[in-house]
Image (tube, rainbow, N blue to C red; front, side):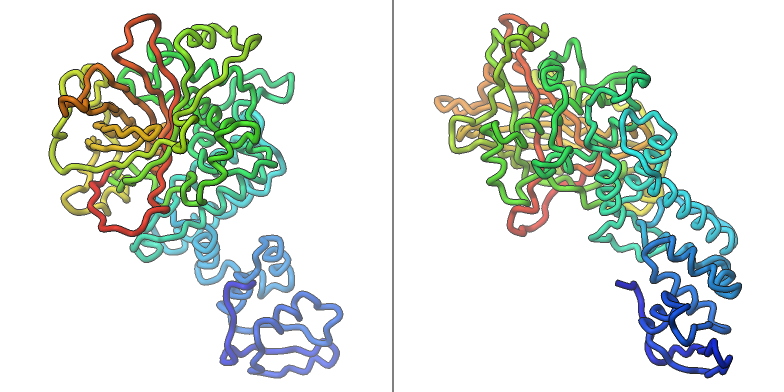
Length: 512
């Protein structure tokens, strides 16, 4: 359907191609104009828009395919020139009708800015139009498309001077990201070995990061789609059970570089159990309401404060203590080890977690929690000030360049047993140029029924990554009080389910 239409007040001139008789100021509906333009040979008349460059641009704006715009320019000189008239405003309109406003727009004369929009629009369209499917992310076509994905991700739900500053409830970029990802097979090759023998280079880390960010799409893929397939599950199983001592989630001099590969293995691990028909967990996952499954984000990806959801659903995997060494050594390929999921023998298959965000300090964060999780370690990096940060106002606004950590308290049910939780969210610098990542640390504990006090001999530590957008958490749990043998640990996943909850008063603290 066309994006705009004309009323009878819009006059055009109609030229009879046989008699060259001109009928001035003849009102026509847009559909008549377009029909005549689409069939110029068969029609007894053709439409020539005289002295109305804006109308010509509006007609060009109605074409959904850029090839039609190119054909429209070839009708005559006036239609060709009209596209670039008005200082190139047509290209600015095309960009903003197709994408979210960009985070950064150059300053300068109107014609200069519009020329920038033209270049950006055409560059993105060229990247979208390339014919290829993703493999390892190292070809020229793949690299160009990854740049496009990064730009689209960074600008999702953005507001700027180009449009009203109120927060949008819809992001054209989100729709386009999903469409391009499906068309190019971006999520069909997650952790798949390269398909060509000549391609021995490691997978592009930017490809891995984008695949991880789009976990919500792979976890809600149709079972018949290639996105639902898990490649090399035995390798994935071995990776996700590695202890923190040999495969920490956070690397680098300041431990603020996310191990994207390990975290992507966790996402792939749970995709196997949630989307495979032969797995019991899939039946319970399939019975969840649409809003109880992973959702895409609804706010800009930014280091500025965002409200993190209060209601989460998820699961964790574990094996028996004596099977940990078997998996970590790789012997499980010949003798498969069956994973267990939380609550698999109860009616509560998934773990529910409810978070609250106190304004001050945590009421319960003993030294032993900090010793185990190191949640309050000093953050060493500074972030560049962005336009989104400048727009954030109020008492919870992020100071320019200063990352902010937030504490939380929580509770939930695990296999019908109630637990308590305390933890922190620590902001991370952009990973591969994409902002919005956070480190999550949480101590899960139980209240001793006889004393009414926390049972410090039954603690479960959680450390993980909050993906950009704040809708999915992936990471590792471990038993800090288990001293007999190697570290007892396994993977976990949580996803936000606020959309499935009835509307309540918003009393949450903001976080990134």
